[in-house]
Image (cartoon, rainbow, N blue to C red; front, side, top):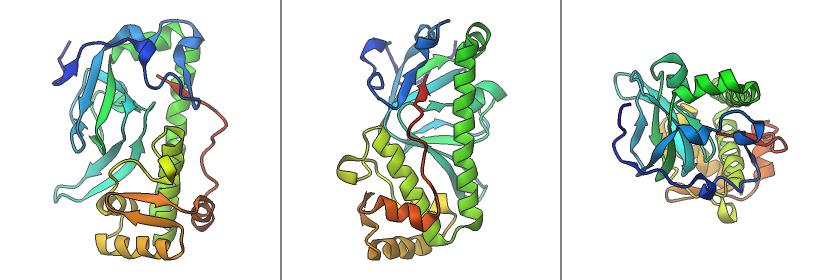
Amino acid sequence: MDTVEGLVANSDCTACPLKDKQHLTPLNHLGGPGIDQYKVGELRLTAGTNILMEGLKSPHLYTLIEGVAFRHKGLSDGRRQILNYAFPGDLVGLQGSLLGEMQHSIDALSDVALCVFDRTCLFEMFEKSPAAAYEITWRGAKEETILDENLLSVGRRSAKERAAYLLALLFQRAKATGLAPKKRLNFPLTQLHVADTLGLSIVHTNRTLKALAQKKLIQWQDRGCTILDEAGLLELSGWEGLDTETPRPMV
């Protein structure tokens, strides 16, 4: 098996920081092989580090257990489009595990910790535990709904509507994972990240965020944002928000 630079020794999965998250349901309640038997270690990376690179192959699959990451694709001249964001409990590298190579890159937005698994666990879990296979597929479908909404946002929403949607989405995901203390997004989100997600110039993004602040929907701060009016962001974006009633399967 290929090694992962920076990989640290296995830790006790019973002490996993995701264990008590109410929005997550462990896969081991389904019977069949537990994914912990495929764990090869944990990986800690600093903000800005590339986790997986577009076009490369990886023998590993990851679960994000601490911090925030983002998925993006780039052009040859350096322009990039941020596709979506990963929060604790999310799978990272599923695409590469199934298709052989990554079609996008994944970077750490904040300092992150990841569980590292041998990617062959997917094939064995699908074979031995249909319920686990269903829940992993369900996760993929839920991620697709977020990508659908992101595409709608970039293609049809106005700049203010796009920004309102993005900040509402990030806030709801951050709340569910304990990353929004006192309504502040507790990760180093910059205006450049916002611009690259919304498909806007940095100047247009700056004006747009100021407009939301003037409406008292947000307070933009250095490398972060405080949400003042979540309901107002949802109304402005025309988005109903995430399904918070159905627990997400935890891998």
